Amino acid sequence: RKKLFAMGNRRTAAVCVKESCKRYGGRVIGVRVLLAEDDQRLGKLVKYMLEQNNITVDWVTTGDAAYEYAMYDEYDILILDWMMPIESGVSACRRLRENGYEKAVLILTARDAVEDRVTGLDAGADDYLVKPFEFAELMARLRALGRRSSQKIQQDVVRVGEFTLNRTAKVLRKKDQIIQLSPREFQIFDLLA
Image 1: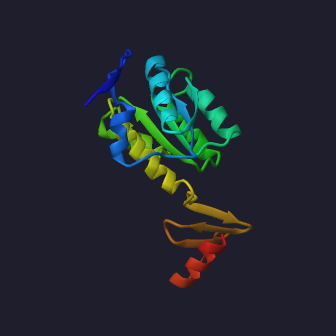
Image 2: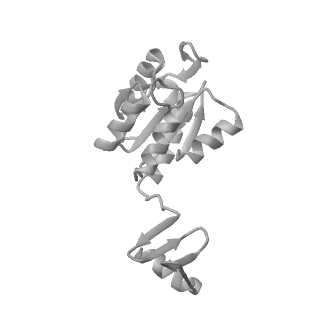
Image 3: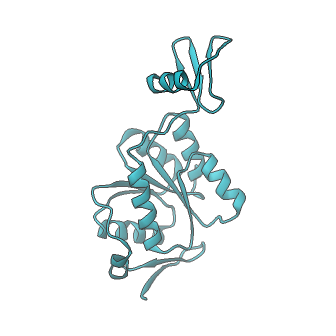
């Protein structure tokens, strides 16, 4: 199988060419992606390959630029490199989630330790892909994220007026008072919240 190699000062990213990707389940059509990657060669290559699959791509090279673009423009999926200048992708992801950003986020990085994956996912990423990667796997992950991107991310704690609903603990509070609800009542309140 033919491969393109993006050589940077980081590990090599193996990316399959368009012809060999066709057998991996189609394209992601009508999706708008923000790619945040500071490695120029890899960024150009990923942008090109995504565009060859009819994906609209904006490309930035810093975490703070990714944050600004994501907050003030409409993207279906963000692809964030972890190690970028000014602000890391994980930090940008965390800030986006803290400010209510609900679209899909994929961390794309050479950091492959379990602790790094946990940190990235706990920062709010929906998926995590380690470099080097196959382009076909990136496309499959984008398709999966695209299917889920129409579903809203539910916050663990929701405030409505004087009420606080904790979805994890299944508790409803009014100020400092706990209100006992049956499972059905909790579901109804959760839907209304």
